[in-house]
Amino acid sequence: MPAAARVDPKDFFSPEEWAPLTARSNWKGLALVAHAWGVILLAAAAGTLVPWLIPLSVMVIGTRQLGLAILMHEAAHGGLHPNRRLNDFLGHWLCAVPLGASLNTYRPYHLTHHKFAQQPEDPDLVLSAPFPVTRASLRRKIVRDLTGQTFFRQRIAPLFAKSGAAPSEDLPEGAVITAQTRARTLLAFLALNAAAILVLSLLGLWWAWFAFWLLPLATWFPLVTRLRNIAEHAVTPDPNDPLRHARTTRANWLERAFIAPYWVNFHCEHHMFMYLPCWSLPKAHRLLGEKGVWPRMEVREGYWEVLRAASSMRS
Image 1: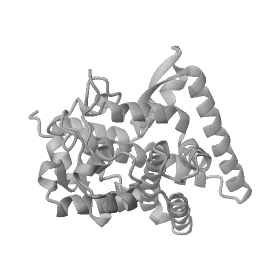
Image 2: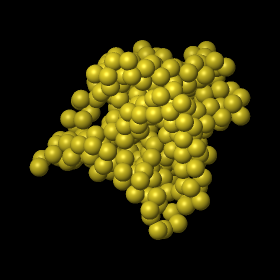
Image 3: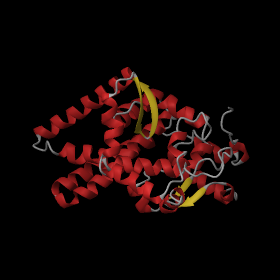
């Protein structure tokens, strides 16, 4: 099958508009990584000092764990920093490894997704093809996410798989990786997290890693990852239209705080212009609106509207 249809930026933007949109930054990617970790640490500190805030801390941290996955995704496109080595270091060691992922594994897989978006060769098609589902089915998926069942199936069960390769939906999409690569990724994840447990234990806070890292990773992170995947490609109108095979979901401040960090909701623009840095996507969306392009695009108002469309099948 041919690759997914593309758009030409010159059809939408003048050279004067396009140049600042594509400009890489020496500090913005660094600031976003620092912001993600800063929010995680502040939320953990708040939950430690005020225990009744722990449920809120879990939600905040789980969303920023998704934020780290999004920044890994940004690094896969070379957008975190113009220096390739620093870009890859940030994306791998500060974003991917703490979550049990590998930038080197994720990048070729994800670029294949872009090349064949919503086509039969798209490795992410398995995530969107089942939709729409019934509301009961969607509720069951959400319950599995929030109770750690999804985490166990995706993260723990593959460790005991006998085959040399196993499907993984670690973040934020699935991939097939060899046993050797999986072992190497797991070793880096365990070493980094063991160091965190050791430091916290020396501070008398051995339990904090379980409450403020493992618990969000096993509950809220799978849920918001699922919501992200549904919003991006599920029940999109036309797999052959580059303006309608991915969705932009306009997110309010609450959704940005708890579901869609770092402009991940502007997914239609991301597929139209895949090498735009993530911080340029809101401006690209605004410019496209000024040019009258929005009616041609797949755009929804909020995640609730998307979930209603994705769970529209009768029981």
